[in-house]
Length: 207
Image 1 (cartoon, rainbow, N blue to C red):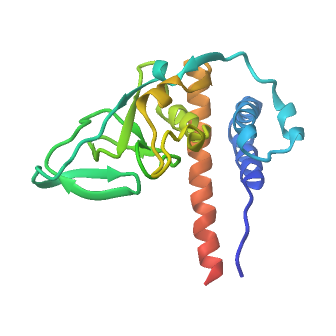
Image 2 (image 1 turned 90 degrees about the vertical axis):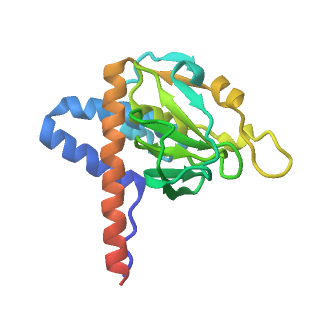
């Protein structure tokens, strides 16, 4: 018997756990997080009374990340460094494009609407950009911001989906201060772990 879990129930569970462990301040953080993702989800407005949205600054992606191009890896020897493409891990090589800075991978061609986290060291192929957050930007918040954009609407081709650096850099988002970013980033990292846990349970019940 499959166990169906909604995003709403996961959020409610995470809020309850946060409040139980850390008090009402966590409810305020959760309220901000829910308000941040509500345009992309169907979270009921009743949950948003926890706290009003704070004033955030409108900025371009060029102000929060440095978008870098991937490169061909076939000239490299085998090694311990993972190589990523738009579909994820591909192989391992002897050199890295980013040695110690984590980033967000987003497709240049093909799958352009599935950004994901890249942990350094790594190499990316030429169809995958990697965006390194600037010093005042939380990595998890940056990832959440990338996931909150409709990148398909910025497709510049008539054939294979294509995304340019300019399109990424010119996209606009709302950015809070670093403390708020950390709250958001931590909340969504916890939510991601909770979703993974429920997916594993779902697979177990489906057996």
